[in-house]
Amino acid sequence: MAKNIMIQGTMSNAGKSLLCAGLCRIFKQDGYRVVPFKSQNMALNSYITEAGGEMGRAQVVQAEAAGIAPDVRMNPILLKPTTDVGSQVIVNGVVQGNMRAMEYYKRKREFIPAVMDAYNALATDYDIIVIEGAGSPAEINLKQEDIVNMGLAKLVDAPVLLVGDIDRGGVFAQLYGTVALLEEDERARIKGTVVNKFRGDKKILEPGIKMLEDLCGVPVAGVIPYTHVDIDDEDSLSERFNRGNERKLLDIAVIRLPRISNFTDFSPFERYENVSLRYVDKVADLHRPDMILIPGTKSTISDLKWLRQSGLEAAVLKAATSGTLVFGVCGGYQMLGRTVSDPDQVEAAGVAKIAGMDLLPMDTVFHGEKVQTQTSGTFVNIEGMLSALNGISYEGYEIHMGRSEESLNPVTGNGNVYGSYIHGIFDAPGVTDTILQALCQQKGIDFASLGTFDMKAYKEQQYDKLADAVREGLDMELVYRILNREV
Picture 1: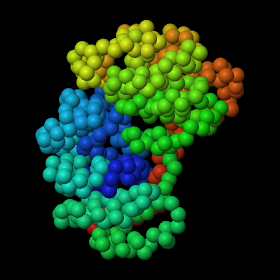
Picture 2: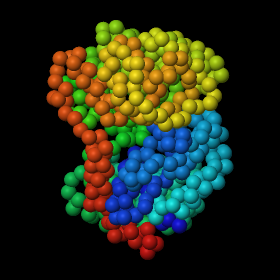
Picture 3: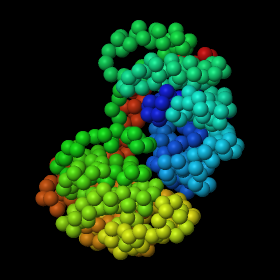
């Protein structure tokens, strides 16, 4: 059976996901067959595997770092929030339905067999399992039914590294406070603490580290420097949303919908030095971009109403009329049609039918069965501004409840307005380049001035850069001793 190590955090966004990815890369570099695991993930960014199962993107990133194909066993439970008090529950890649938070809390121990089956199957196929916790293990009001932090650590007998984020301040209180709130047997599982996202001279930390080790009774296993790596984030805490509104040679605006999902679809546009990709939720910030992207959403109808009420719908319509390239993906694609209907209240938005933006000649109807599939092919029959895509290969995946007329082609287009159900459609070689070339031609600028890159090589470089930073900051000798149960 595989050895394991678990990364827990003092809070959300402490850096657990990237630290797990870094460890996956390090163990791969050191010659081990390594696999990531997170029993329960709450995120709107998801992925469809080759087998058609849905899982969280954080474990997809970690699998890429480990050099293996994504597998729903890496994330047996995925929760996709539909409202402030409810989520769609996905187990082993398959939708189980929508549940309110209290209902899921009462029932989640029913899913332990699914979690353990997934874990045990991975444990027979790999040498090391890197486990990611969720939020904080010291949520004392939720600990009784925990299956993702210490509850899971007990089930799989995992040693734990506890990570705190020093960039936000208060890291010593975070780490010691978390340890102090744990039960005695839980504290015994913590084999070290980690100070993450550190900037500056490590010598300044040394007195605090000594005191922290005395207070917690375990060593500080590492101080990891704040590292700028271009690796996909999994949730709305993404730093992408906090970037400034600087506009570059080509300017692309992404509408930041309230329930935005799979915003990583647009990552390929960020790789070009002279292309700005801005997330916009106010008309005043839209300005006059060269392209407007409308992303996926967990609630098309609710977010379409928000788009209308915020004034952004009118702004997008005006831009489309003036010739601006508009592209919608999944839920954003549905919004571009004539109508969106939900007669069975699949989205639970309280609306049976709503008018769309009427930029594409199609109607969407929601059904109870979810489309989950990987897809690939060649672009055909595309007219207008993006006609140069014809003949280029694409690949990606679909995750949606709605079915739309005129959606058989990978891209439906009308002059300068286009849409697609395919997530990841911009990732394939040549797709993003072709779209940017069309924008450059319209604007009268040289495409070469944007800068190009090899996406696959770039990703590998970023994972190696992350591994270098984690290896530099962590006491890897201690980590291996923890893995071997010598600590």
